Length: 378
Image 1 (spheres, rainbow, N blue to C red):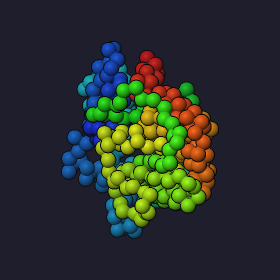
Image 2: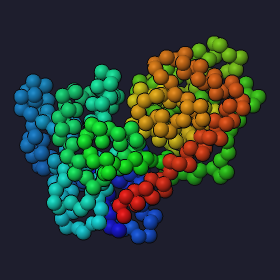
Image 3: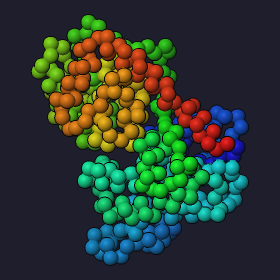
């Protein structure tokens, strides 16, 4: 099967979308029946065609009002140019299927196309309608701008041969809000991205029997979106109310923030360093205020770490309450501290959670994702 994978960025770069496109490319390429090629659409951007694209879709009234070039298409401003490049490329090649990262406007020139994604503009509007504000990552856009983008890209999903969703949460939004035929919507999920590293052999479940120190870990790049403030406050509560010492390891946050001696800020870490930290820690804590999927939970569970997330987005699809972790319901550091205590101050419960975490992580692999997608493509 001849498959083209298209994105505005380099799909084979392990830093693109945290290595997710590379993981899917590698897994699909492992099928002997497949001939998989990649297309980096931005390679065909020039100063001329980029300016023409911007001017063609310029909202003059709002550009004058905002004193900045504003697009009629909202955040999807580069979509028309990328769609045009993709059509020209596909017109010269005979592909059986096209997998898009981001989604581009359909035309007769395209082979049967599928969009692989973790979110959509409609999903952001769903979040806005429920909570009264746009999710983190979209907060710099106006609601009007996101609605413009949602209106513009909606037919991309509706006309696709299939929409490959990272979660059932997104799949439900595609059906109920975007209006995609349910038969076209597939929750295929995602896996952990371990490019360039070797995982330890014989990873086993953890135990905390007799431990006087409990080591918590959190990974993420956004302080507020990932709920780092809640984790720090919860860790402080734990140390004020327990005979054990709780240490919180924070990885990925680039900005400085206040913390006490029981918080270790590792800053940016590479995958090998992350593996070493996950191996040494006992519990993964990520009370995100918004998370499209949550690959970091899968990474932590790979090493037997029970996880604590939040009862929103796709987190309940990864964390089974009372089985491999827990979920907070609101911005309450005491609730978070109580759940950490529930898991870490009960040795037998912790051991069960850890064993179940490893089992759950094995469901989220790129081999499984690729197999699901191949079943759909066939």
